[in-house]
Amino acid sequence: MDARYNLGIALQKKGELDQAIAQFQKAIDIKPDYAPAWNNLGTALQSAGVPDQAVAAFQKAIEIKPDYELAWVNYGVALQQAQRPEDAIASYKKALGIKPDDADAWYDLGVVLQQTRDMAGAIAAYQRALQYNGQFAEAESNLACLLSACEDARLRDGAKAQELAMQANQLTGGNNPIVLDTLAAAYAEQGRFPEAKETVQRAIQLAEASGNSRLSNLLQGHLKLYQAGKPLRNP
Image (cartoon, rainbow, N blue to C red; front, side, top):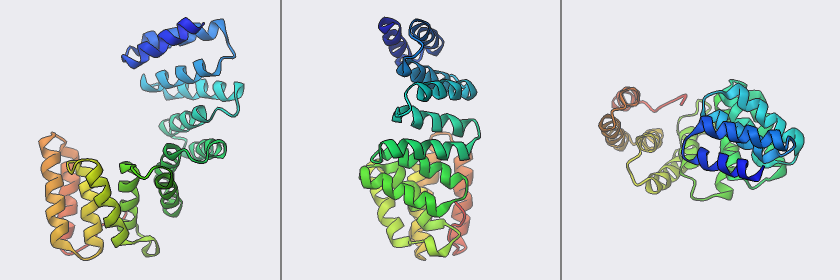
């Protein structure tokens, strides 16, 4: 069983997903109650683009081992992909009940809360992620975006957003257009529109250089707002 399982992991790392899935299934045939094999089968199915089957695999893993925190996190990701955000939220909360210092789980929870328009909850989740991982650029950027552009004025804090976005920009080498867009939004929230325009123009250049026309078009819309002296809202 171990040989099948280990081979599956090696194949998964190489991107040979169909073969990895086959090996995990063979390992499960030998030992049906081996939760890690079910978990890895789920991640392989997830990568192969079949979230519904991945959900079933993760369900089996946590049925076998209810305190399997990683499987609860992976289950949450699969539920998000399957367009089941409320179930994903419950899964992340279950994982965090087992391991409260999992920064990635807090981040994932923040993402799904943001998608469900619970901005206060998302802000709190991103803050917890940063509490446990102070070098988490994605959490810094997402939190800065909400603090800059949330429709609820009570949740906005342009100065804090700028601080977070600048840290995220440093961590990503100054060449991530999403992070630069967030920094521009933070400047705009404070009425610093010249800096906002300059920063989002750099983001546009990077998006165009990478051939990401969809992102470039989105950023062009943000630039027009700043040219008109308006901050970004409803990120």
